[in-house]
Image (cartoon, rainbow, N blue to C red; front, side):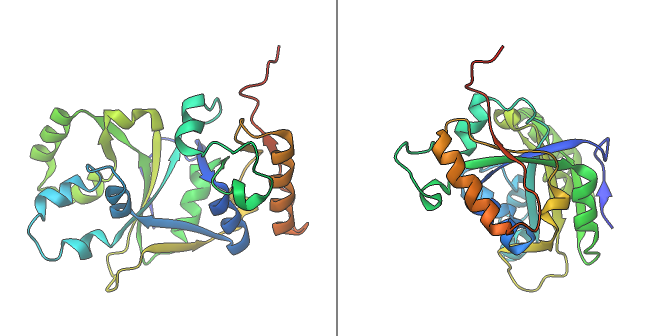
Length: 242
């Protein structure tokens, strides 16, 4: 069973996800978690910082890392900022006139912590956790390492620490540890009903034109083929409204 450390299961959490991944989720009915070492490779050198210190010269380090999977959500989303869209969604080309050319534009979805917990709890073979990420400066991280490196929970707890430079994410992390794994699996797949997971409206990048919005809406509706009602709207971030 999972370990829910976060304060409230009713907490709403948000995710800005590229359309190509969102469409895949609707088609496969799967929630995908990737290894945290992939985030480390993509630029956050402090991801897995404790493992890289404690097991620096251990030949088993790649196997240890391969057992840790995660997915990021955020407390920030109801009033999604300009910076969030620019960070996590590719600016749409004004000339893009089909879904394939818009697949790296993002859509914002939201759900609750309890729904995420229910999904991962259906897989008792894993250790599962959901919690807020704590943001610290480098000196605070050094102190945390000194105080906690011998703790039985050190590896798990370190996965919920990031540098202050990432505080804008306001991250809530879903963490899964596959301690019985003997093979390096790049991703973990969790069966879901996307229309039970997703709540309310899905919100599209505010930089899309009206025509591009219609193209995306039609494509996503064609995926579900009328089986569900998918509520989509464009962000009004750049609309002059009073």
